[in-house]
Image (tube, rainbow, N blue to C red; front, side, top):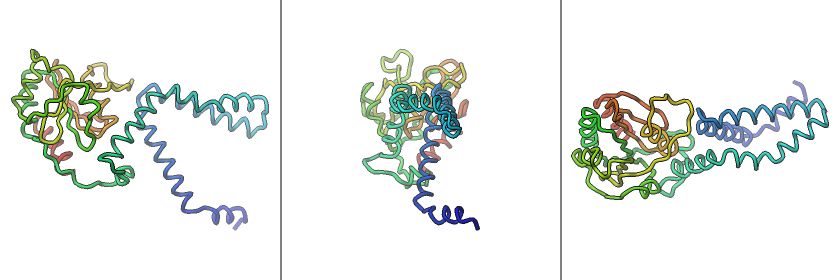
Length: 266
């Protein structure tokens, strides 16, 4: 065996493997955060520029290498300016998904199965209300908390802490109701807040048919572990959103299965 290869093999430690895995995990999370947005194109451009700089350095092209080195030297500041929204979302994602209930969820960070979630959500009332609103084409957006309490977004609306019932949900989203605008946040057994403002997604690859409700639903699910139900006012179609992925045009039975899967059998 070649001596240099043997030396490399001997010097390769367990910590090096952990280092590689952590970097891969970080890059994956960054990709998941900026996929489908304008930021992905900027990120690819910066990566290509960095590879080009490495090639120029390897070829000992001093002048060009020096110019690119100066540009990359201030790249951290430029990245903070360009990606300020993505950095904010990334930090919010870490805080809301991995640091819930003041504990660090290592299992969730490593994509392992976490403990069973004991749901108190009144699934029957939500299903009944969604079915009735879909038939009447009443627009609605319902956010169901898992571990993130969504307090920041709840405070943008009216906190009511009312018992979850299908009649109350329908009356709140009735078009003449003063509370029908915005999102409803359901926490455990109660309707916690209504008229809440949610962050819109900045993805650029969404269908043009998606309105503000669908974009807000994807936006909140991108940065929290909440489940979101959207009912289209134009078509009456029911959509279910989790972690930025949407099941569109589902029936009440399918909605029941998704809610039970994520709230009871998780």
